[in-house]
Image 1 (cartoon, helix red, strand yellow):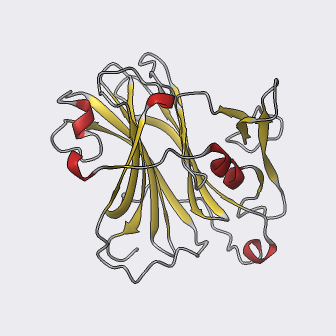
Image 2 (tube, rainbow, N blue to C red):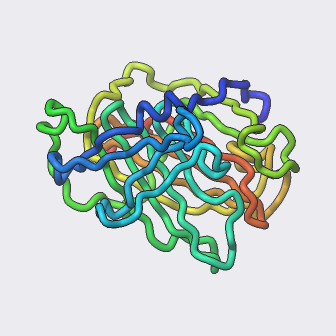
Image 3 (cartoon, rainbow, N blue to C red):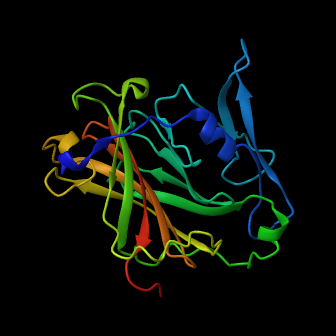
Length: 270
């Protein structure tokens, strides 16, 4: 319900950048470094954004520029972000992308292309990235293709941050948006070992929402029947930690809110 949302501090770009900039490696090639670069303002010393890797990790392909002034690029302090358009072009294929921080040294990086026909995800990728710390990368087990066909597990979300406009009818301007969070009671608080760098599994999917049943954005979309959410989620198969980002769009494709969720898988992992 909307009453349980409490205002929270807007994330700081320098915090986000310090968790993101620098070298990353994959589980399969722990010695081959891929560098996320900072982009400075041309007129002064401030960092204007980061250059994320190309989704294929091909050094010859253009890196993706995440500009902090881009309202479709929403980030939080731990290095997680959600990137996509402020207005979906419903006649074209659109890419959305998210990075989900699991520990200081591991992130799940997901991309998905949405098609206009029925809002379905066309193609999606899941990639695990690690900081190249010898003690971490030496222990990395090589895992063949990350499963994406397994059914999405049920998650007990513990902490949710979301950003939205103060008035739902206002057009999206991230600089004027309002940050809120919910902390939910934890069913089992003795299992907070988030230190594992176990294999990740990831999913991207689109959910059409009516306002009543949607706890994340029901108070924002105000009865719009054909609003939809793009969920991009990953879980650690070792620690059962779960992370997700959700982008909410109204029926005309306008961005209405972005949420960052942290929690744990309910029950046992297969």
